[in-house]
Length: 431
Ligand code: HAM
Image 1: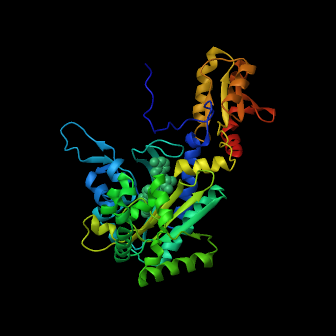
Image 2: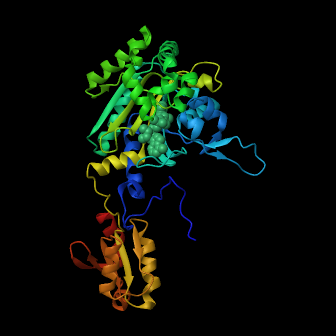
Image 3: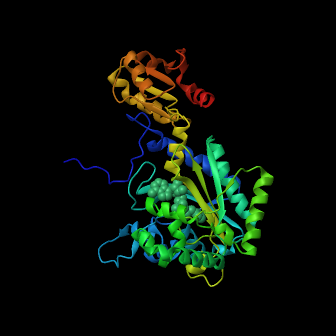
């Protein structure tokens, strides 16, 4: 029996694959990450990469024991003789903070802006835009509590969306306050929900003891009904003075810069490390429940991971597949096939090595391919066209004897003869 890829994973396919869509196009993934890289590096972010697997404790302590990620979705990694305590990373933030602490990055000028891209793993139930291996572009800033850093992070996220050409995106902005504000809010929620215990889903009963705020994020329809019926007050009503002032400062910067946002008074993020500013980006083409990306401030995370001193931080991550689905919903076509500039074909078997050598030399200047067997001109043109080539060079006995190439532009039909010695200049001019 044939072996298929695991559930919830995708192959990223080459251009010209049958039934190719944007979200599984390897070229589209590369294009998107390159666009994001340009926006982030122009703002001073530097690339960082951390391992795909980490100590389980990093995720348990970082992401938090009350989250779905830790309770239900961790991929544990075992190998012979090990303690079984590794997991495939479900997100990038905890690992980046670990790397910052472990590698003494505190010595670099603060705030330090970092970015990364790569696969993340969560054992979720597969749906459209919800995968077990998905990809994030992630941006983190360490070493500042300034609201200006929050606003810049949000503006950069919007900047990436704009660079991609997406239009139907909304920023939902909220604040989940300081830990003491959250404690007051959780006390309020406990008092509200405890008399309703029997009506809560099993998951939410559990949330009521661990982290009541998480009930607001419940996927259960009956929980959502109960929430509507009770008219639960939002977290924003519980912000303390400092968190409230910080939140207003973030909004003032965004307004000044013309970055649109909607206040979402009850934003709950799916990770425990957040405090103060928290936000998500949504797009109608991907579905109301599925954010394109989200982020927030996490000033307590470094200490949770063992740092003696507090290292404030803030960041966000996009889901690359979701961005591609949103682009598809907005009608974006697959990226144009980037074919070779030159395709060299020999007309006779004896000249095949010469064609190969010509193409290999041409690679110093441009993308060049060659035919592995002799071809008639019509077959060579057809083959070159299927590969998306621009120019075909035919090499027959005459051309080899005279040191020339017969060139044809596949797209315009233009034909010309070129001295082989002039090929480098020709390629440079047409690259
Ligand atoms: P998150 O909200 O868990 O945040 O994930 C960010 C984005 O990753 C989501 O908005 C979504 O687009 C994408 N994503 C998450 N799970 C899946 C999935 N199963 N399938 C497809 N896409 C998915 C974080 O991960 C935080 N680390 C963001 C952050 C950085 N906060 C501060 N710094």
